[in-house]
Length: 442
Image 1: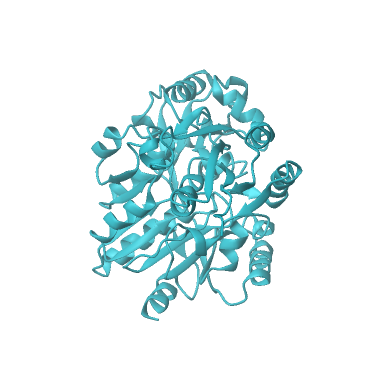
Image 2: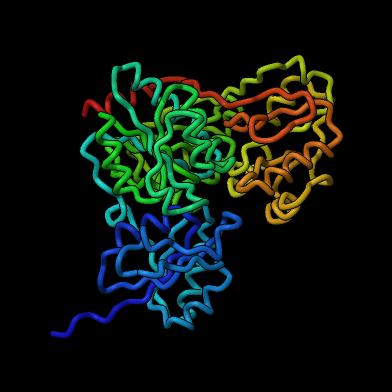
């Protein structure tokens, strides 16, 4: 019997799940040849290569990473058999438009699921995912870490990947201090996710090779918390699966991939931001959630906004800097900073869009839903400089920084500033601690 013909594969990605899917499904599969990754969502990651050190001996030259716009040309050039979709927070219609492009080239269109891609840990795993970017999963994950640590557990956090630099050097990353972040030359987006854990004395892992990452985590912890990225499901098989839904976006429980899948397979569903939403919106969120998952235990939560210095803001013209991913591909017009400015009695919220410098002008063009706020986009030094210039040239008296990271450490802000951040609070029974404790005991 002759061996099966090698299948030529393109993986559509965004420097995260695409690499993970390759590592666990295709890297050692002799009947598959991945001819390219495509890049989307994250600027500046195309025209690189997935390095030989990570791709393995079957790929001595590595694997090219090319723009997603070139999909048809790649399929024709390599006579591609299969196109694998592997990134997150994309409207269902967009996923199938990509599928139609693949099918029109004669290729199969594939979504790899949890059974094929989730790694099994030797310690319990709690995953925190969401139906959309910006639902508040990270503050909930951090609350869980504090609560579990208070129970005497040795907790390690795994973050969904953000490997935008030297991929080989980022294969396994462990961050326990700010010096670790500096040594790894983390981007602003990475620091936004990692710094809060470090500030609370925690250890967070990330990188590219999650098999190797899991081995190292199991040696340090007796429980793992998966802090998801965008609305993707986790890379480790969870013992307790939590999904976070946004009461301010009740119609988006089942509108985006793979957030709907996260909602359907959750053990616990947190309806967040009930303090900011109307009762009618909370009820619609719950009904839409129940339509896709009748079995999940539902927890209602508040996301109170904490502003360090409200008096600095009152009566002033304010520039609001928001968390970048929440505002861009999370489709939110604004976030915690805008809410804090209005609550503190700002005289006006100054629109930074006319002053947008460098890549920020393109960010606003690509994301026309963004309101009069400044998304903290800083994937490289040029973008950070554009951010600083935009702040400088915006006619505001005070700046509210609503990013998880202390942005003033990354760029010079030549105006008075104060910080705003979302926190987590239970908003009824059952509490999140009660729901998680029951699942862990079971």
